Image: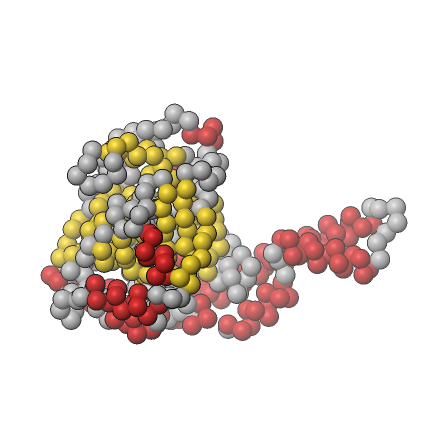
Length: 396
């Protein structure tokens, strides 16, 4: 299915982080994608990213890592997961092609001192992070993710859980980004699936979930996929899209931008986005929650946990004058109240269903068998109020 128009709807602003002021940044922060140049050079002067990468690779070279390998013969939306020493992966990843390529995303590879080397260099406008300052440590988010992609590799098409503001610094290589605003029509077009990602130790369904799709915006490339060469990407529709998407043109991306080495992209995490690596690339990425996007983050949690729009809206308005830590604490209490209420309702429904099925048989099951059947239902559904309540008590 061809793109309706290869040109994006809007250009991405490019700003120099060294000269960026709060007045310029405030209306852009977490609202639209923005490219910042010299983002890691604005606080402590020029940074030798290549030397930092060498230290990381030397330190972790023998560590086994799990990466995804994409081949054209795999079923739609699937990749092969492979485990190998990091140094072996790095030696082979550069030979990737559009049809066969590898991508590594390590959220737990970097040691605290390696993370600090990067995070302390963030521009002042990105320093506030309420995930670190105001959320319970048991509900933390990864501090920094290390990404290595070969030529032709690409991320999945997704929108991030917690609706945070994301950032990505490309240390080497060249990468293409496509962004679509989340909307009812785009969610339907991409056959969005919600996948719990955060708070899974509190409840089986978690406290936040991303939006995932097996559509691929870069599925087929006409021409050689490199900058300076004439080429065009053609997408593959989501497998669950109504009618299979045959002959249906995707709308133009709202934003499209090529990211080059040394550039940081900052973007609304709850927009649909997918990246394509033109060359072998190394990047680090993370996310933040500040006072500007805190209502969006808390609204995400409340919505996923089952609060109504009215309840969420009233809470966010009434708590807006509180300090961030108090807003977070109260929002989590409200969200978990609704999450466990829903668990109790479903748990009770499973009890009634199991008992009804047992009494309908000519020879009723014993209570021991009934209990075993009930536990199987709980296991399959992921619900368990007593277990969830015990987990809840560990955090608050």
